Length: 297
Length: 320
Image (cartoon, rainbow over all chains, first blue to last red; front, top):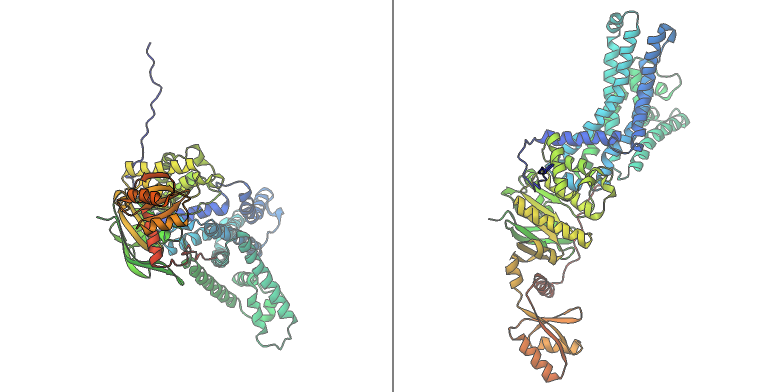
């Protein structure tokens, strides 16, 4: 009986690629997807997943737990936090998420000189910027918007009449989307701008968290220790970066500023805080674009 | 017809003139770009890729004007940069697939092509390991795979054997030869190792202190140095070297012997000198013309004509 070969091995050698080719959108998408994976620690060791997924759990967990309990025990579960209150929790998660994800998106490319390869493909600086910004907006949007939307839907589903709740609280959904979108863009732009200034992730993270915490402390200390007659004293309220986000959300949801707080004493309307957020976002985008344009492979 | 051309190309970093009005024509095939560290090789490659803007002059690659259409150049060219440039915590397969997508390949085709190219450059099961754990040789293979994966028409390889052990260097040179032979991709290899150029290239461009010393085929370049001799005459000391130079010969110390060339009757002159001075002639062996001889001679001539400027820095400029 003759033995038949089980298989054959072919050395096909190098071959040209004659398949489909896509354009600029593919290149941007590739960088965006790689950025999302990197920021979430996907396809990397488990330690890199702890912080991003921990923060996602922190944003979604309370909402999902409340809805679950409400579905099980009904109104006995009592009232959950209002949308504005929950946004104040989300804002902290957003800051921490931005402070870890933005450096992850920008710093390793420079520190490991990966740009020497990326920019030798037909990738422009605006493509690179758009992809990195898109990746962070996607992730931050997930944290800023989705928990609140789920809370809104959960409230509707557990209300005596879902249709009535949706009809009567349609404005809340609009406010959630508006506030979430503004905060997402603000935190993404500022965190990427800060990350573009440092090659080390740890420095960028510390710099961002530090600037938010320190600015709030500074604003309050200066305001409450300065003599009331000091010119421009009330403008110190705009020094507090985290305070800007909080006051904006309170204004969007029609909540009054806390009695005796810096914002209440400063006397600016909520729209002033929105304007400040817009100015800061535009400035951060300008800085980011300038830094990206200066990147050398 | 040249596949890449530079016309009166100049580039300055601050006070250092890295390239001075360079005219280069890279012919189809494999071309070696040789020169000492700081000669301007990497600067020339980056100018050809459109990564740097020249202060003067122009360049074209594969028919594309670099200044007018740099993206078309980068689509058609694969580049292997000098030095580390790989993300440490990504697998080779993932990174090469990412680079394929930057070259326009859809995700599925990018993964398949990355896998194929990794295999071809000798990354088999290792391609599923994080690049950070790779040896220098393996990292060079990943860089080569990344340069090849989008199927470029031309490869620009900047010091591809840099930091590799002898076996790794041998493997890389074989890979370059295979790529040239099987894909007919035009290759420009920048290196300071003339032996590498002699091994794999058809043409050579020699640069020194931002100027082109010579460009042409390897055979022509090696032939520009007249045949010479390896000599051990007396103590090979100053008196011997002065006497040889006085007889109209070019003399260069190479290890424990002198390399002597410059006249067709050099052997007779050396013999007569030994007899006349009473110096023992221990060694007189003919040496075939080589690129190294040519390069060293041209470099010495250029250095004598003009003191070399300070070495050109790597264009750092990284935003930090």
